[in-house]
Length: 236
Image (cartoon, rainbow, N blue to C red):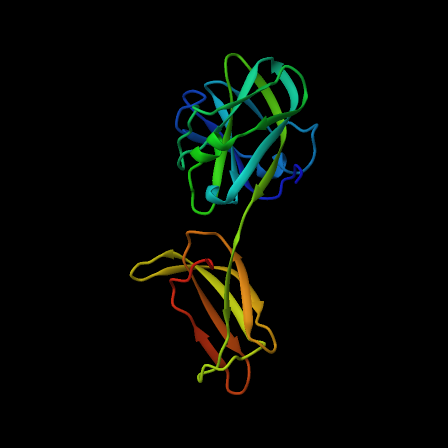
């Protein structure tokens, strides 16, 4: 893999009581600025006890096998150490397995995490987050963030069939994730595909530990359509 902005969902600046305190008041959303590839642009200033940076990653922690994060120090106002810590839930972080980096000069600064760090990442609904925070007197203007991430997905597969149980090919197939089992249940559209023209087979890449359902339709005359139960999980 390589560093990129892929899988970064949002970048936000938070005013906190200290570097490891719970999130306080939202300062600004800096997603566009921090992911546009422009390193000579001030996106925000990060310093202890005032402002920290929250990076949201669009991958559930259970699927992540490696995660390294780098920030571009556009200007070092006060030299010192800055730390990467995992969010254990939506608002809280843990410094148990923090990853320090020296921000005494400008340029890219890497934070390479390990298995202990990854184990602390909280599942924030098929995503997770990390925080960049200053320790001591460090104060730095940051312009970019990249991640180098590897993860695994599993397969959910099936076959589209007619009312008699015979394979029916070339059906439009849509995958939905169960958000809440209710009642009433709520769902989120994930992806769509077309089943095999002959065998009716289809498959999706999904996260483990989630429940899904599949809806299929073939626009014959009349239309043929069907839905699975809403308890489908990744193939085992």
